[in-house]
Length: 339
Image (tube, rainbow, N blue to C red; front, side, top):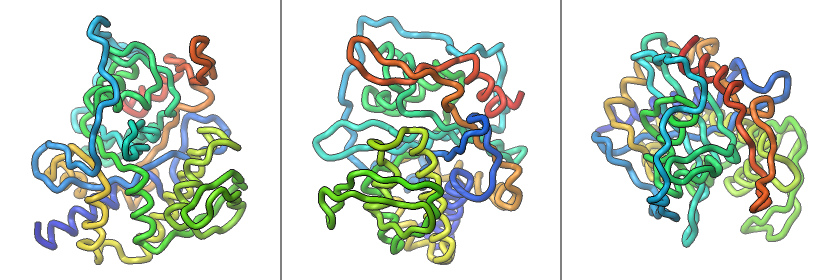
């Protein structure tokens, strides 16, 4: 791959990153609650085919039961609507994969790009959403990849929410830390205070406190800030992740990311897995200037507290979120079917 192609790839990376986590955007889905979407720094594949570009060993942690009948028909009340023909739907995923362990996709963000209209709609899915996984029956949505990889997560999204999925991009904790540390850390504005236990390599068993106000974070501290959950909840985590990703974007822009394309490309490509073809990525670059110059073209939607009900599974005591499919359909209808 030559330098020109590298720069085009980095432009695509920044485009996907920007639409997922930057500048003032319309928020829909949480009523008047303070919100923040959990986003990923998406990167591009090396190959020009649709084979995944691996960044980590993949190990299925369970086998779907063969005696369970396949589930058909979406659970949202879709009245036969068809999405626009020029729409591309990409799942941005954050994995908690670690050596000698299974993994879950605790970050699930759908990026829906309309290439004809040059618009982008985003939908964030909470990790504890209790859904029907084909062949598995009911489970948290973040377990689907562990059971059957991207094909099973794709069919789970399509079955429960009537959203056709085209591609995915996924990173893990190590890739997230590496990107931030290589950039020399980031500065964020924490809108609220977050305090919790933190086990950092340079501060074992410590008690970390971030915000409110301006803060500097290295890779480890940024990951702790995004994942901290013992003194808060998953909806608050989405706000903190938004702050971190905006800080990461600002740092990249301050370093003239496009001019340093080859260097950043080599960093990102080792941290991201994708099945998206090179040609498809480049097709998104064409509409990037139009979208980035007009934030009204980007809308964020959330499946949040107003669309779910907290529930405890009697058999296990697990806390999950039961989806209200009628209310979720109202979000999907606007974001995916443009109705």
